[in-house]
Length: 333
Image (spheres, rainbow, N blue to C red):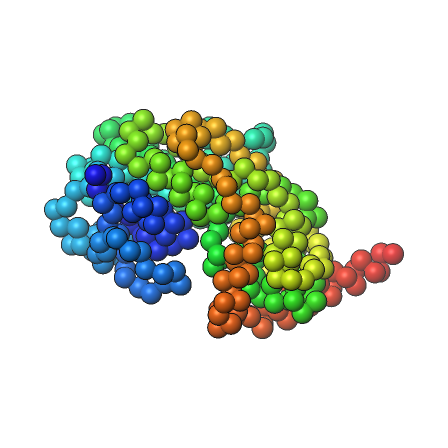
């Protein structure tokens, strides 16, 4: 039985990976801060408390323990992964780093995106930090045989995550018959991946030594447009989306909290070639269509009305923005 350490374990991706790893018989330990989460606890695991951003906290939490596989879901800076290289160099046979498909070159110059697509994102610091992390780890692999495998997911969701900027506020707007704001013209191509599908690929990589020294993205195969995503969510909510479009740059300027994700990722069409993960993990298949995922999302929020938090200030800002866009369109007629 392989011993596996997940740094994290209760997040969108890691919770599904934790449950599947336990179901497949791995001896799983979770290291996290022990805080409450919206997701139910993971049965069949050992949990130890530590802070992944604090190297000494990690050392204190782990003591002298070793693991066959370590997966870090919570590393976001090169300093963190440098500390992990020092900590796990002689304590694991495989270290899996969860990077991001947002690291791929933007704008995209060639489709489909493959793992050799250049890593370059001038729009989003998060993505540049993930790229820097990958470089640290690959240098450690080249120079010290550090046993790294890099995994790049793309826009992974579970039932707690509405994959539109604005979250539940957008669904409530739909139910009230208010306009739904969509960046661009709504026709750019996008990939959403259910966390259960990512788990099937990632757990298949645990202990797979031929993936060491390599980078693999794990994404869905379903190609959606942003209009399709909004319409699926509206249908799941029992209503119809009244779509209003605006240039991505204009949306980013008016909603700066969304700007990095829009300009650095969502404004660009993304189509992925999943041949590598399918070759490495033959039972990997992305089996959850977003039509089902959308129903799961809305169903989870409807189960408990306390989850249906509406940001009134954001709601008013969207109303004002849509009114400006609509007035401008009317003036041009």
